Length: 328
Image 1 (cartoon, rainbow, N blue to C red):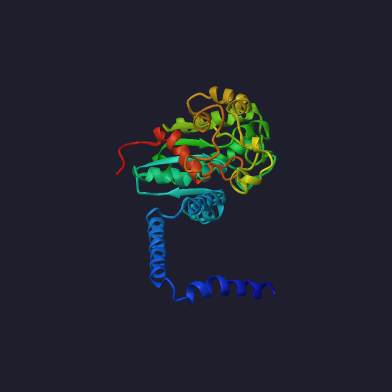
Image 2 (cartoon, rainbow, N blue to C red):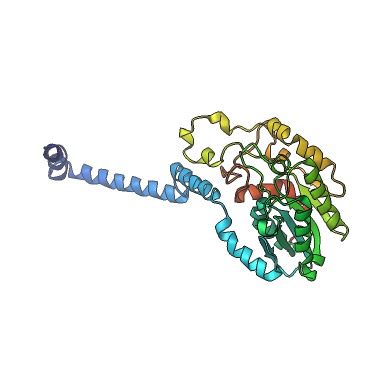
């Protein structure tokens, strides 16, 4: 009944007076031409402006969502390739650009997700990049610090001589508060195969690594951990209008500094290593950044940096320490 009624209205109000009527033919033709010209102009405008604003928002949202995907699926094949090449028994990544110098990244998963951005930058200067996981061999739970250090030293001693001798700079990139306290604000708890947590153990481990590399003439940099969020950054991007508590996406710089206080004091006591600050870059004012100027998330979870986040880390924190000479 509704369909018949609408069809009848269309026939009497549109078809008869406009389509089938012989009146005002010139006016109707002119109106149709003007309408088609208007549609063509709008189409050209949209094409020249690469879409309309709502489409830009959709594109940005898709780009932001892509940044939230953990990189492990594409890294695992590279782990296997590296393990075969240098006979390393834990996760490693290696980019060989046939340079005479190598930069070593050492640490946990934060090292591994930072590798691609740093390696790409180093390649411009003809510098090789090697990233090594510092987990204990075979991931033995409840290992002592001595077992952890012995395991790490064993793996480092097995690196090909040509690669180890080419290492000039070592960057230790890993979570600190988690290793220190055994837990952090995001609810993650320490996994014992990293190393026993506690201030003394963390200090001894970092000082040991610093001394180990410095005795062979290598510069050591310890990268202070980036701010850790108490909530998953995905909630900041996906379904943003429906989030129940907007205040949960505000992270105050002072809260980060308070959480890291003991860890920062411990880093200040390390001798022979340059401590690279990150908090000032990620928290330029009273609150910390979760997205960059382009609207892309700096994290893909509560603590791991996304691709955009690692590019931010490189540009605003690491670049002065990685630059060697004018790029090729």
